[in-house]
Amino acid sequence: MGPEVNWRPHVLVSDLHAAHAAACQRTFADPSLATAIEQPAIQLAAEIRAAQLPSERFWGHLIPLAANIAGWRQLVETAVTKTVGRGPRFEAAVANLAACVAGVDNAAREALPDLDDELSLRERPLREQWEARGPGMLSQIGRLTEESLIVPQCDVLLVHPALGGGGEAHLAYNSVRIEAVLANPVADLPEVVRLAWLVAQLQLDVPIQSESIHAERLPHVAQYAMLLPALLAAESVELVRSGLDQLPHAIASWGLTAPEGVDAAALVSQWWQTYQETRPPWRVALAALDQLFG
Image (cartoon, rainbow, N blue to C red; front, side):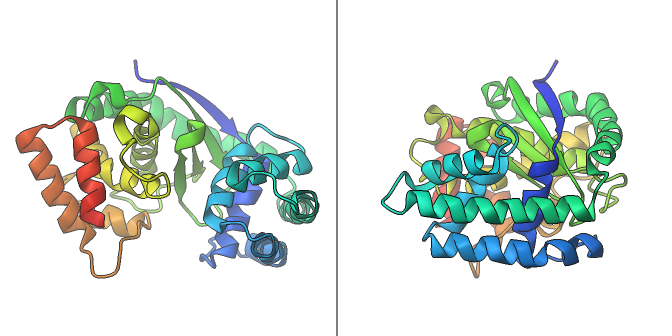
């Protein structure tokens, strides 16, 4: 069966996804969008700094919240509140940030006037691949780890492929966002495998699994914890040749970061081998991985 997946092409999420990429100086696959959104994205990033908000934490609320809050001001109010609460400069910060979000949204919509229809068309290829292989991959991930780790329901937020392939899991919002590419940018790592990896992370924020891990570190640990289960599951449904061999390739292709001097692939491989040999409760294994990354 697998989880109930709600497919949600979303323009505002797409616009903010692109703005975050521009603010982080990522390389765009869509030059026209990069040109259009560069200045509004820089202005939004500058206003985030001016408001003294922890940048990544704010983006981590702003983008997934946009899927359910349509108004720019209400969206920003909610994101700021969830990031730092309501301080003495709250109203001024919200007003300035909302104006910047409006600027991003308007610039992106001008560059991509037909994005709503385009995203709806782009949904079909990935959805068909998911319906054919996704539930099987998640079932195998559950067998490799613990079946309780498979989320019963989630939203898949489809965004414009500004980077030519990419995505992120939003654990606190039970959603993932993924660029709706029409062809796999990495032939031996299909995007449907990336999607299974993202969805597999969503249950790792339940307290019984992650209460010993600092909330700021959890997304990073979740990414690495579900890499090998996802790759091995993809191997089981014949989407990749060797999950173990694909680990370094996935880390590089999907843009995972690690502390300087840490060989993330070797660390995760050793951690996974230990987990397979000893089979501790998943919460214990997750805490151990967190400690290994320091």
